[in-house]
Length: 465
Ligand SMILES: Cc1cc2nc3c(=O)[nH]c(=O)nc-3n(C[C@H](O)[C@H](O)[C@H](O)COP(=O)(O)OP(=O)(O)OC[C@H]3O[C@@H](n4cnc5c(N)ncnc54)[C@H](O)[C@@H]3O)c2cc1C
Image (cartoon, rainbow, N blue to C red; front, side, top):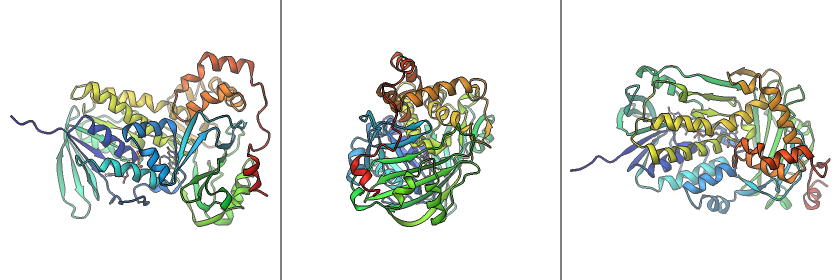
């Protein structure tokens, strides 16, 4: 007697899609990933991920999950020139509350060009012969009922031909532009609720060649807006990446959009809350044009709350929840969600509650990045809030007082700093800020004041002379 091999279909071959394919392969015989793009055989930018031209940092919370799914990835990234930046040891960071002391790193982030990050993951996932990639192929329709799918229809973008793929599990990872609501509607699935917190943030990015003395090693430098200032937020980030380059991203909320011309870009950097980013840019050589980007609202869709939903359809990554990129949480949130799917498949594969359990747990996994971003963004002038989350209305002020205390004390208290680093990097839950050690440190306050100037070492400072 022959049993049919089990098969998973993944819609979208971005970072979330590739990590999903890897996780599905732990449980299924075969996986097919479809993507509209002809995915390049190398670290190249592509149309389907336009945000890849902007600075992307992968926090340790996400990086460790990537490493556990694909052992050796972090070494491979570093060998290709990515930097491992200690958090907060290798960061010169002006947070909304002040300059952060550079305590020894308890967490880290990977600073890499986004196409390099995507390709390093993709190359390893596709090395598995049981994972098939259908490029230049887009999602056409779900096949099945509101209770169960038996496959998907996909369209070849060159021939226009539609093919049917049988699937035991379907996962949508098609990013912010996902049309999952339109695909599920003909099956009789109701419209899900959606929460949006949109501060109108806009990005401008330019690559620079770092000055020679800083090419091999330099901290990440960031100057963040103070969301409490009652004015549009302006932020700037210098992220050292491979080949002695800095990727410099400037961002502004509604009313403070950064320009996309060279002189305007420089002037915006110089006009941040502190001129450090602008001063450093004066030491570096621009390479290529300034590129802009929008489509950055915090947005989550509550598929987990629907009472009618196919038991083998899951959605994760930006298709489910996208965040203001200033917090750098999108990829790590996607990785966390894949880890949740992996764990859920271990226990519930083939069961009637697979999708509902996975979606409920994924909703929990994306809740921390959601509230971290949304509860600051709501303070910016003109922020559009369409969300029923009480933490953004009646509970906002008390939560804000607590965040402010954590943010201020954490600048110069090692205990609060370490726990905050865990939360920021999505390595630890927001709830860890309620631990007795943190609450005690918040009561007593820090033993030393925060730095009054950028905490650069003498060697780093010498660059500015
Ligand atoms: C300006 C900017 C800066 C950011 N900075 C950071 C950062 O520093 N750190 C961080 O963690 N995150 C950051 N993010 C967020 C991060 O880019 C996303 O969270 C991440 O790309 C989500 O991955 P994904 O795979 O879900 O979606 P995507 O990367 O968008 O991939 C979706 C894939 O689906 C394909 N696709 C779409 N529709 C279809 C279809 N109908 N059929 C077939 N294929 C389809 C696309 O071609 C694409 O390959 C940033 C985002 C922006 C906009």
